[in-house]
Length: 191
Image 1 (cartoon, rainbow, N blue to C red):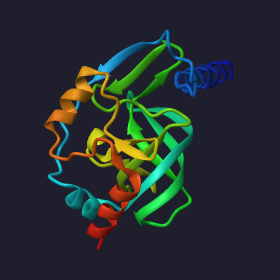
Image 2: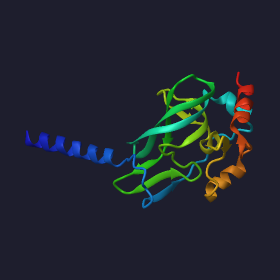
Image 3: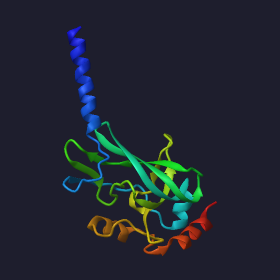
Image 4: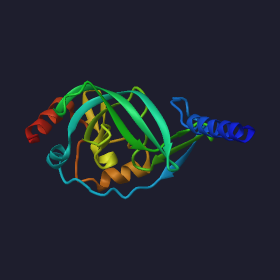
């Protein structure tokens, strides 16, 4: 009986530590970044091609996140409010899946070099495909996600060398485009 109890307690403690490893903390200035690398499987040649490959194109606002570990890999599921549906599935709220996360216990941030994690309050225009689990994955990481600022869309943060490099490799240009003009272009390509 003592052996079973000790094993059960050990398992519960291990699970608790694993769950505590992920964080929703927004103040992570002192955390060390652990860059991950990806070779994106496909590079889209145009907004038309991305639109036709998406189940949803929308402006979203990140409202919450949940980080978990599966098979030794951190991933984060973001809850996002659909601010403006441009085309695709008509949903008011979606879950967006990203590989990477914040390990609170180790004070580490695991994220792809060219596809930084989202934060609560961030607003993006996304091109995404629905997964079997019901969550969405943004197409080709950084290529399918644009920052929304002052009624315009921009590529991800240009301040990092890796994001600059990804932007230069991309065949798609949307740097400072008016959001309404960009949305109309996307709608013209939806089928």
